Length: 237
Ligand code: ADP
Image (cartoon, rainbow, N blue to C red; front, top):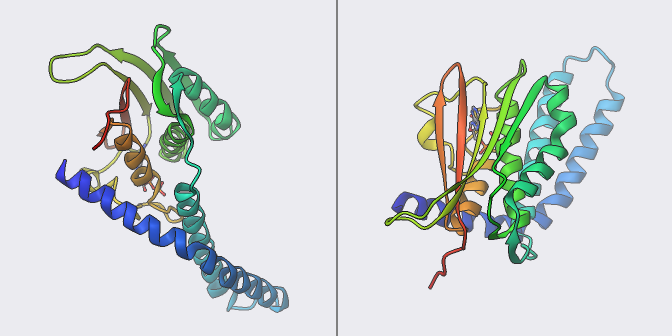
């Protein structure tokens, strides 16, 4: 819990800073990308400098993606708490990525409990979480595979109130044990063009809802992310 709190604080600090400088960075970034584009237009097709130009362009592209993600997350209108149908959100999210999944030869299995109660939540933020986790699952299956999305109700127990469990599983590459402790850290990525922000932001959102994200992974055979969400967001002092 302490580590999670630190993580949240770290992310919030990074985010506030990013929101305030995003605008300042965007203009020079655009100028730099545009200038490289103009240089590229003037180079002969076989110029050896093209390799370096490509690297510079890719890295600037990465900066642009990081800035966009942070700005979107810290935009003031973060949506209202409202009665939210999680199954509907999951269906919407899957709908949004259908083409992408099909293109990547990923088959989808949805097992959504039909007696799921609505929860009090920021629907837009939860949609973002589901999207992040589903897109990661897809990335983990470069040669296609199976994506399974399950929702269920966990009854109240003496130590925990009633909650929804959303399990998102893939049959992908899995996660090496040495990566597991770092997954939710901002900027931790193993992808050449990743931002390492998807899970950090997702964990932050789920924590704000009083929930948790759990990971279970078998390297070589797949990963399950389980998102636990209490029916009501607990009041914070
Ligand atoms: P990004 O996707 O930009 O790398 P994330 O924070 O979403 O950032 O993910 C961090 C890292 O966690 C990824 O780079 C990847 O190594 C690992 N990861 C996340 N989801 C999965 C998954 N379903 N299977 C395997 N690895 C995963």
